[in-house]
Image (cartoon, rainbow, N blue to C red; front, side):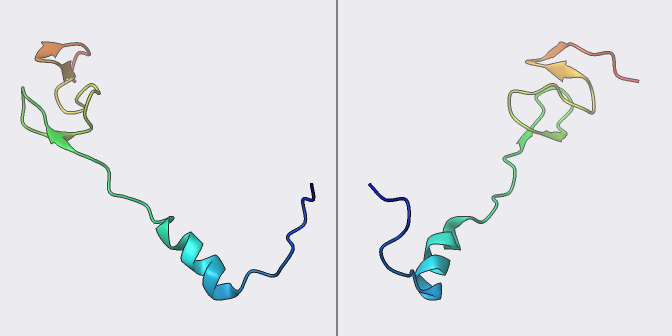
Length: 59
């Protein structure tokens, strides 16, 4: 087996392959306690709660 490619890949074919590399926006949900936007399954940065329980004391 050879590591080297047999033929040159054109710029169009290379760029078509890389067309799906785009970043996606982070998925945000509302906190069930304070209503702030937060990432799912994480402690809320606004109120410090997770699953309606206070985990970190909010300052």
